[in-house]
Length: 264
Image (cartoon, rainbow, N blue to C red; front, side, top):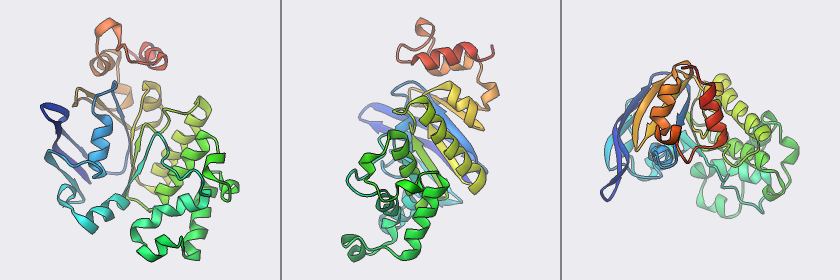
């Protein structure tokens, strides 16, 4: 169980995340939506402990994640894998080595320096790449792959950590529609087949409605909606993105089209 209690992140007088509270009682596929600056990325970074909370608590299976330090904090970051919009791969390193970087938190400094990996880990990395349909690219440099393929390498690296939870910060924002669909299908399968909680920041309503069991809407750092995709009506969507000019000025054409298709 994941419990978020009054989680807050302040930058001076500005609260990027403002007393956010929600609970995930069982593994789920959760989409977080909202306009630019709503606090979505800051929230995920706090969950992964890349950013410290100003106030509030994160509890996972009864353990206070916000209190973890040193090795315990690094262990949590392995249990709570992070996937980024810009992939964060090493471009000139081969694909399988990038995936094996998912084991860095549990390897010795010496093994890391000399790039030494157990044979079992290498086989497991290739198996994960095969599961994602890109095993044939294992020996290639990461920079030689398309954006969609690179994002699937990043997903493989996250799975190499054997995490209990996967966080994805705008994982398809820079991808074309076909690759975006494949990445979202991969994340959905990770939830369904592995029983892992997946929490993804998403930039379109259509994507959240299609792939997620639960949608959380944020506006100005606060949760303004928490429900099923079916409950995401036009009125609710306007609450999330703002009612000015009919929709937010920062919304994409995809979001606007999605809003028009949401039931009233």
